[in-house]
Length: 363
Ligand code: NAD
Ligand code: WQD
Image (cartoon, rainbow, N blue to C red):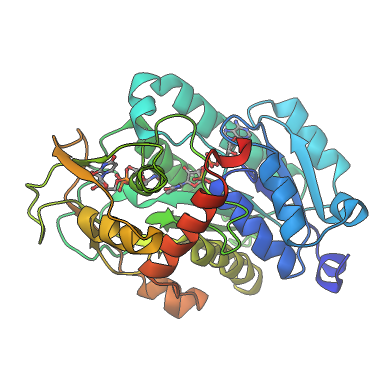
């Protein structure tokens, strides 16, 4: 165990076997933190954590100490409680666990509300009971709905115009976290040692530069870049561009894509901020501040893989917005974090992962 881990407790990572969680764990372990992962593997595979251990050079003994895994559903309160009972007091929790497929959430909304909200209730109750009072929550730019002014700052209205149940779970959890935090300040002193950091991610893409871990969607990818990567690899014939008649420079949707390794670093900055600052609730956009169109992305990926990405323009996807990109200055001034990696690096690393693992972790 590192000096840092000996001085502070491990970080609890819900959903740590997933895409963003696994990349964040690499950074945490490299920076001397120990982690305890809780994941029910509903959208991920344990192979991701095996690769993480390999990347960070953890042998079995070190892994037992530094990268502990529990196959637990956070909606199973008793099982989650056991994790708290059998672990040292956590320094902080990064709460990634949740269902995230936008389209699916419109078909089975109750499952989404139950999984994402109930899991969060139990987590907060147990954190409170077991003395872990610092949470970093994975929110999303989706909470802004169809904002009419770009770039989007943290002051932009949230909660109106969200087009799907998934997005509303994020908005609701944000509100719940704020209510929960405020309830803690109602005592005599008016203060609490709780801190809540809400991170609103824009569009994370790419993979660890080794190409050993990456995003491994089940079935037909819902998101642009995992789909484009499969077209690049010849697993799918062409990309269907969801509309080229948006009011954007080339008519296709514009988003703020950021490298998943930059995003991972943002979580370390958030934990450290919560540890240093007075208790409070803080909300940060994590993005690059640049907007890229679908065609910008297919061109950049074509450069990375060495051949053109075939595209066919189709209909708009219901619920999509034209443009969404961040004003990320608050994260820079408060967290000291900014995205550093370029679009070409995002595509290079995505291609490295895709070409080495054509069928994801099952390869
Ligand atoms: P992911 O699906 O790869 O990771 C989420 C993990 O949570 C998975 O490993 C899954 O098995 C686990 N999980 C789900 N429900 C669980 C439960 N009840 N108990 C235990 N584990 C459970 O997704 P990701 O892309 O890594 O996203 C991580 C978080 O960030 C999610 O909350 C997601 O909504 C949020 N987010 C993602 C994006 C994105 O574009 N990827 C953007 C904004 C916000
Ligand atoms: C990007 C652009 C599409 C696929 C979603 C969620 C959001 C967040 C990230 C979690 C858009 C276009 C896509 C395709 C296409 N997730 N596209 N053909 O829509 O910004 O956000 O994922 O919080 O909540 O809503 O990302 O990658 O799906 O789409 O033309 O096959 O690519 O229309 O313009 P989006 P995306």
